[in-house]
Image (cartoon, rainbow, N blue to C red; front, side, top):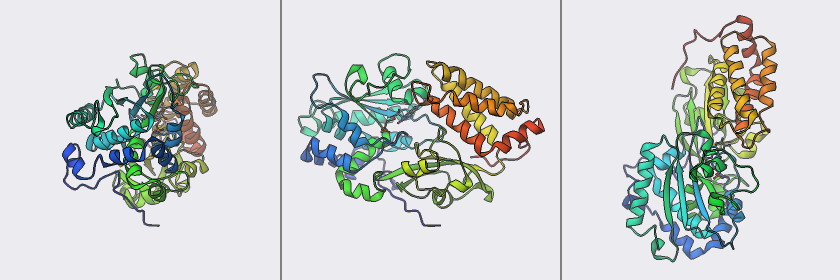
Length: 431
Ligand SMILES: Cc1cc2nc3c(=O)[nH]c(=O)nc-3n(C[C@H](O)[C@H](O)[C@H](O)COP(=O)(O)O)c2cc1C
């Protein structure tokens, strides 16, 4: 096993400082990257972002610099920056770190992005259940207005920037970028057809950049240290360090900042302390619950967008969920499927109807009420959701089903043969 290098560029070491306080943040060099961005100028900042090859940290992995480049330079409409702080994907808890402990890092990233793209209004859309985080970010914004970091003249430059916090109302679908825009506009959170993409027609019909919290939090680092340095932390076409969260049956669950490309098995065994009670791994979900599950033989992979594609899964949000031997994978899938059935917005028929069907068939399998033919029915129903919906929630509901059933078919069949869950009397390690 190779030693996994960890970093403290994004995830600060516990040094007793309270980075929610503007004074502490500035004392540690905070907001200096804004001044450097002013010196560089908008075109150079966008060029650095492209060169840094930072892939979006919200799940889809789209290169942030390229996305910024899609925003029209000349337009008579206002442009907006929208921060996706909805963080609703099960297994994902990294953005929460910035919202709870380091909100100025996010605000600094927002200022630099706004300067580069000529944006004067930014909305931070925060998950509704994050009551304390909403207060923390709001307070940080207030501190910035008082200090002249936000408002009519950002740090005495001719840049104007207003930042607003918009709390969500607890719907997972509002993390999908166009549903988020609908919600921001005061409408029900239902995804829009794309194209047009938000960079051209976004919030209130105007050009809009939507980025994840962690994506924007990396921006001050890129400006401060340069794109070459940032690229060097990761791999070609997937630069930087990123925060991966490990949860589930591990001895030391938590957040770890690693270079993009770190090995997933090593992260689980070295950083997260290995599997609870010395058990073997049964399965790993690599990037949040919507990513296809992996068996223990498939986890020797680099954490990159391409690396996870090689094993037919996705890097997603880098939220690794470890499932120990002795766990009922049918119950895991049941839990995941009920989540997607509950969170479907109901706009597209295959998702509205299909997610409920899927959950009910899995309920029957878990309870021992199913027939063998239900396994193929399950695959068929799941297959008819993905690719047939406006947004990717349909794929998120389909992919776990296909991967769990194909990789652990025997476990599903055993439930049907025994007429009950064979794992019901197994004590499970809990975290
Ligand atoms: C159902 C669904 C839920 C999503 N939830 C989130 C979320 O909570 N946070 C997030 O940043 N991106 C989420 N996304 C991805 C966003 O649509 C979008 O790709 C992302 O905000 C873009 O930011 P990035 O390019 O910086 O990653 C979700 C996507 C889907 C389909």
